[in-house]
Image 1 (cartoon, rainbow, N blue to C red):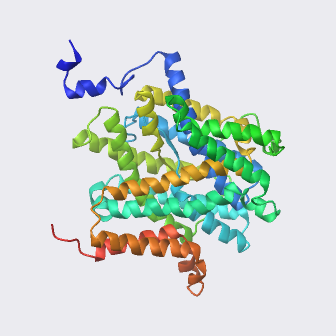
Image 2: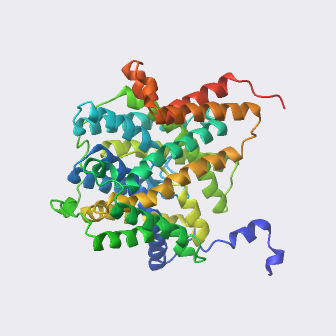
Image 3: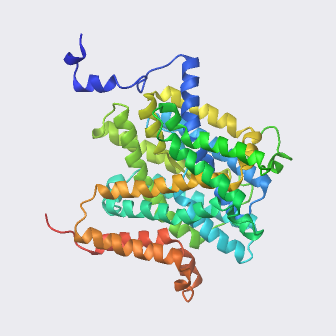
Length: 456
């Protein structure tokens, strides 16, 4: 029968090389999983590496944290793809360490270190907050309709835009060589700028090439070239591998557990927003996998996916790494490759866990100079901001919406640039509002509730 006689749904299915429940042969599944993994492994480990570098975490502990990022991502990806009871969406979803939490963790964590708190105690507080915040997402998964009324696309778009814009400062610091380079007076020297700008330029060039696998792996390819360049320039540091074990045994609560209200409040707000981001990402995955995007089956997928978002952040806190979330990049890879099989996702999960249990992998990643990483994270952080703009583009931008956007961005970015405005506030409030994301996000939420919507 010709394609002209197929229904629209059938024609859509022909766009996929492997559909949701197709089972490729093992070797084909492995190759498809490897291709998918290469496109998303860098964003999985980048947040943890940036946080550890900014807070001055030891190389040994950084190695463990990066290894656990991969393991925890693998567990979450398995649950999302396999669907175990109420856990998981039953789609090809890769979950990884979220960029959304980098700003508050670095900002408040750095303030705690500057105040004389030992790094180990700071990490204990961070992981305690990660565990406590995970219950917010797990609760949200059970009351989605109510939360969606409170946290509208307008609020979500503003918060995601603020996350991206406030992270750009961290990206520039990385391009210059990082906080260590600031302290040893090598910040933004010729070597650091050559490495970071080379990586950035290669990413731009590769994204203009009309070859699917090149586009989807542009960041990884650019980092490999940057890594090689750093080696020729004598800037690779493999000291993190020196005392690393052959196999990384997961160690629950390595740093102990503590808690910080000043960190929890901005993190709690970001957990809410991350839950709603996950709804959009899961819906997009469902759509490109030729699955329903409304009705009871879709809602079941949404609830299961958000539940794993929270449950896996709980595991992340227990095993000394940072909150994880559904990866939006995953949808781009599915569209580029035509592979939507959740059985391929299980292979991806296995590869992530195996790589996480091999400390040499984290050690090699940790050896990359921060300037090389900076060229890539500038693109990633810019993509986060662009995602916020994309969300806002779907909102009716009337005078009310524009007023909320204007005030929220002004307050959020203003506090991020001039934190001295808060210096006479009590310490708790000073720490909370020192995060531009928290300040702008809370302003957006309150204004969205207080200002009446225009009657249609």
